[in-house]
View 1: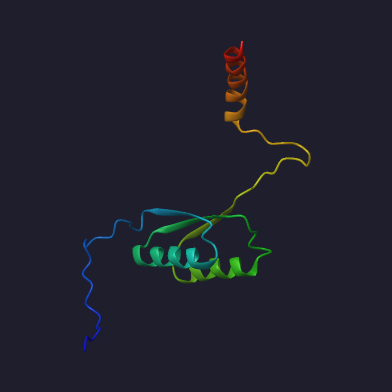
View 2: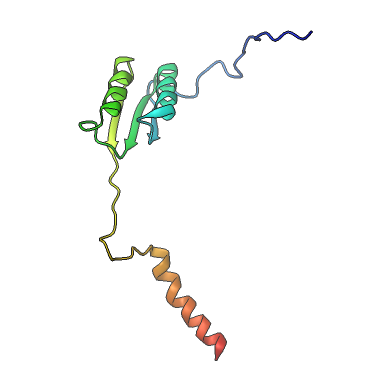
Length: 114
């Protein structure tokens, strides 16, 4: 009968790719599994964390607790709230590519039909 047993893990590299002088940028890593992965990475390597998110730590208790826990583990962490701009109601937001390609496409369509 086969028996499962753990084998020792030998790292491919003896040196970590990140160090204490590096900063890991982590968008949306303030909560959940991403926060846990970012914290583990920072603790293992000594790198600082730059975390981007939409929530406000003053209003979100889970976010504030995670940031405090990261700091308590000796990680230098900076949180920057991202601003998500939405167009005013009733107005369609156009991407820069739309402005460039639409008129050109319409003109070329007219030429083909003539």
